[in-house]
Length: 251
Ligand SMILES: C[S@@+](CC[C@H](N)C(=O)[O-])C[C@H]1O[C@@H](n2cnc3c(N)ncnc32)[C@H](O)[C@@H]1O
Image (tube, rainbow, N blue to C red; front, top):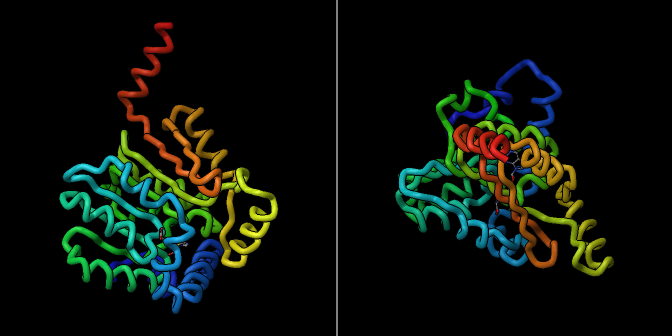
């Protein structure tokens, strides 16, 4: 298994609150998925809505580098890699059991040559000793993973730091259920929280603030009456920024 922050934190004798938190999260995810990973793809098909629409709408071209953060069993990577055989894919997940499961599926689909799997927390994408500085991506996505990550802000920023100028970051995840009856929304929220899954209003606020700051162009679309959302962020490249400045000075 490739080196990762998890393996380095596990071996390390020094402990910090951040490392402790990540180790707790890794242990929790390994416990949660140790057995359920075998029925994961079958069961999640019915309630992790919007994944395929997001994947099918991604602009992935030959030679592109694509990263999924929190890749789970690898089902999304396999779907994308089958569609775009000339791109390179990386899947990162904090749970060793999920990376093992993804490895089985990748081999079964004979995609080893262009799908790489790494057991690591998303937050480690900040660490250039683990992921070299040159490792940057054209497309990065989180599919139903940010709602499970307590340190979602670091995970999101770490992923953003790996996006090429002009690249795209996508998030598909649970929304506020505002288009559904209150009883349904309440039940779903309670049920999801049993699994450590939380809709985070602050996350969408953060994405909107990036758009306001001119860091990206953001589009948010609703899936099934706000059951879930798909956020698409196009990173603003330097040339686009210069063009924007010129536009505003012209007017
Ligand atoms: C609900 S699953 C989604 C899996 C997959 N993306 C999908 O759409 O089927 C969430 C995944 O996020 C992973 N995860 C949780 N915390 C993480 C972290 N800090 N860094 C990376 N992966 C994490 C879990 O281990 C789990 O595999």
